[in-house]
Image (cartoon, rainbow, N blue to C red; front, side):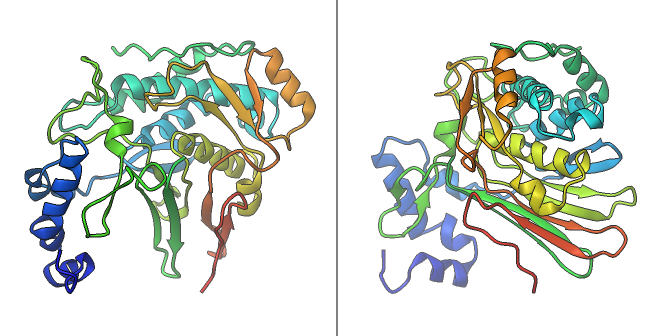
Length: 354
């Protein structure tokens, strides 16, 4: 590539055509082809960025907006619907019952994601059913309150290198944004001399198994883990935005932060700092054959860990602050409209007012 015209200059001068057409696209084509990949210049030329509407549900009177398909933001919304079937007081504290019920309902939501969710341009995903309160009640009633499940079946229908940030202004606007190249350094491929690092979402999200809703196909978008949320009040005004990096941990930790805020009444920083847990594996094809583990920070009471083990969970202690994620959160007080920001001490990040 002409050293006097790097990719950022081409994009600045030519807009999107400076990236998807011409020398940059040619370098990407050659780099991917040399590595045995399927991406070609024609795919780049045909690329169009879609602006999709958010998907949403309600949780105890608040409206939660999430990233739409082919993101797995639906997992958080389905999980919140199922959690709403449980009394708020039962989820207000981090105890064995709250963690057990939340872990089990997330297993069901992940199973539904694997069975039904894909690029909506290739096959319909029944979001109206999956995000309905009736569906949530059916899934809630499938949870064994006394024993951890070894497998999670989809309901029958009638780490990574991710960055999250949120922002709010004095006019009432709020932004929730997440971006990723998937694994650390993405695919590890740089397209020639462009400096463009290629991500590896395709390798982590697509399947080669016939009948899988995410089977690899030309022009198809893979399901991905990227999702972030916004909360609005009854009048439609945004009152909170948040999210976290962390692959399949994202819906789980977003659920924990939201229930800490809404059910537990914690302030923004306390909600972000609360002891964290996750079920593993999630949706990565390479991990799915493994048995479930409940990975949980050791700041919870030892008796809680013992109780969870008695319920059949494979409890794996992850240290005091090593539960994963890097949650960031902004909440606007409904009366004073004062903004409060919380930033996860598990990663480098901060809340800043300007």
